[in-house]
Image (cartoon, rainbow, N blue to C red; front, side, top):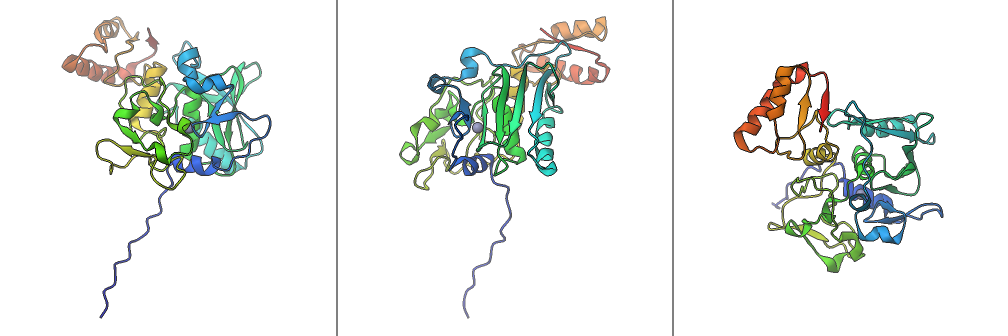
Length: 304
Ligand SMILES: [Zn+2]
């Protein structure tokens, strides 16, 4: 008689976005015309960009149109296969159901657009740069729904969750295990009043940038809590996107940065005059319910 340990079924798990990005960028050899990367996958123009969130300091939002949507032209290089292209398009289109962001194909006359190409690694600039800006999604390792969403969120203005200014309240950085301390410096990021989110698609995982296979980050206070395992945008990722771009059709109960007016009728207009999201408690929730029930009749939203 011999005791046999039960064999645990291996459940195949899609690697987290952080694992995928690190794997794809680890031994990256950039061409001479490619940008320097910081934080693993953020493209910068100059050394000065290392020290601040370029989006917070210079402004980097994409422009909003009178219909309330933010149209962002994209061009997808023709070196992708149909399957690869479909993954990219799925990522681009995943924003339209949950926000006012509308990625649309490049047209003659566009002044600013995303040029999605398979260069060396996965990377993007943070926010709108002007002209064509490269979003690299290498055919070697970057073509996953999570990595596409992650790079697009960079292009929309977001940084990594672990560089948030309030990071040290939620994550302990184990500096002795990190390849390069600059990976985990905190900066003034566009948090939009949303809580720190372990499940953000912008949060790297426990072993990110490790030089010795030991953890580089652990949650506070319970170091065993799982984090950095996202395979798609979290609710918080979507909420902060809608707040940053003031997407009227997708308000969230805690929003306190904008009001939405609906000009369906004078009655609705009056309702919306008092639907001030800065009001607390039951009244705010009640107004949100009214808004939900009226939404079907909505013809046009105006952000003020
Ligand atoms: Zn990134």
